[in-house]
Amino acid sequence: MTPTPPSPRRRRRKPEPPLRRRGPLTWLRNNFIAGVVVIAPIGLTVWLIWTVIGWIDGWVLPFVPDRFNPEDYIGINLRGVGVIFFLVFTVLAGWVAKGLVGRSLLRLGEGLIARMPVVRSVYSGLKQIAETVFAQTESSFDRACLIEYPRRGAWALGFVSTDAKGEIARRLGPGEVVAVFLPTTPNPTSGFLLYLPIEDVRELDMSVEDAAKLVISAGLVTPPDHGAEA
Image 1 (tube, rainbow, N blue to C red):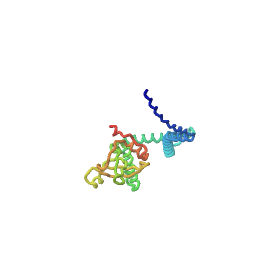
Image 2 (tube, helix red, strand yellow):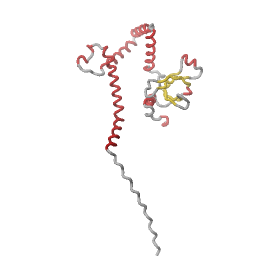
Image 3 (cartoon, rainbow, N blue to C red):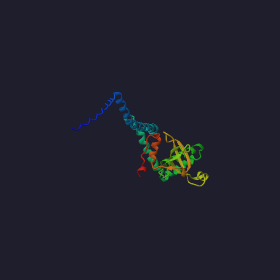
């Protein structure tokens, strides 16, 4: 008879460490953070809209005659009435300005303003900004880009506004030069205007809206890479 081989020893499994039970404080903290993530954007958006409407009401309603103000009849402060008056007045002003009489009155008013030394500078600057922002042209911040700023190897996110024109293009010599607006974080309405050769500007595939979100969030909100999908 052949001897039976000894049975191999079975290794004992180490007991698994017991799962840590989450306490009530951990549960409250996690749910509080999740609630803040949901409520904060909605609350800030509602607060901003409510504040802007109140600011417009406080600026417009003093110019509205009492007989046209519904608050005098209802006795309740209705927020948003000034916004309605402002929109109606703006539409009527634009309709009149496009007519023959409106254009004549506008030229007459601009002629009077042009004779005032300080007022004409303020008016011309504000008019140019308004025409640039609200006019639907192809050269109004339609491209996001990267430039090396403030030193070589450091990259900053900017917006290509237009090609260099006039005296600036003549002074900078031959070669295509573009104007780049470099916004600041988290307030993109302030920044720097830079004139750079086109070869020093790296255009991006992301939209201007996605680039603005990236600037406002200080790099925390990264838009999807559509170029990689293509």
